Image 1 (cartoon, rainbow, N blue to C red):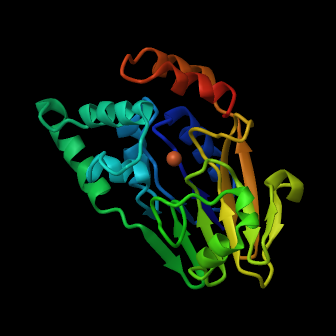
Image 2 (image 1 turned 120 degrees about the vertical axis):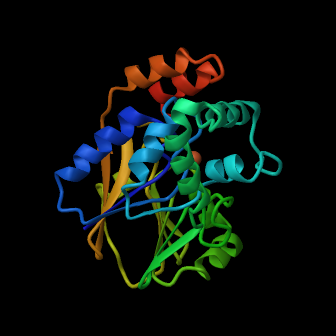
Amino acid sequence: MIAIVSDIHANLEAIRAVLSDIEKHNVSDIICLGDVIGYGPNPGECLDLAMNFKVTLQGNHEKALLVSLEGANFNEIAKNSIEWTRQQLDMLAPEHREVNAKRWDFIGELNELYKENTTSFAHGSPRHPTIEYVYDRDINSPKKLGAIFEFVEHVCFIGHTHMPGIWTDDMVFIAPEEANYQYPLTGKKTLVNVGSVGQPRDRDIRSCYVLFDGDKVFFRRVSYPVEETFKKIKSIPELNPRLAERLKVAR
Ligand SMILES: [Fe+2]
């Protein structure tokens, strides 16, 4: 069994809760689809945890931090959180130089795509890994979805929208709750969005991630102490209070 997590977004309480849920299952490897940082109050600590995963991919927030904010298409709230994150990872502060150097090395080495046999992994989509969004409504855009499926051998796990779900190449979308949170793969090409650990946007405030045994996809929802993360964000002036408030409504 492997665990696939995405969009932790510097939410330490959420990833800790998810990791203890993962411990209850027979999980050999954890794969993270990116956006470990951005929005949340604990970027450094979340990067340190991600270093223990088998694979972490680059998300658009890591790319913005590493490459530039230009072209990242970020709104003011996201931009400010990236700038604040950059300050937190400041290498000039002598007492944190060593630990932050390690974190920058880690961010700098993240790949955009990962593959195991016929299973692939990306942050946004296998076509444009860090930037493309795949939405439930894309089943009405067979040209877009069809072109994305050209990059899928059998199954591809994605994140980025913070909305979990399953798409098959016959233009069907299934929400996790419609599948009772369990989905046995078929012969069809399949995309699976694993949802978000640290900033769910599907009106369920619990963290979301996926377990995969090679045949079946299990969507997991895990409660975490939202209030703690909420308070931390509220106490940091550089982080917009809306980043705290949205955690309580998952939107
Ligand atoms: Fe994200």
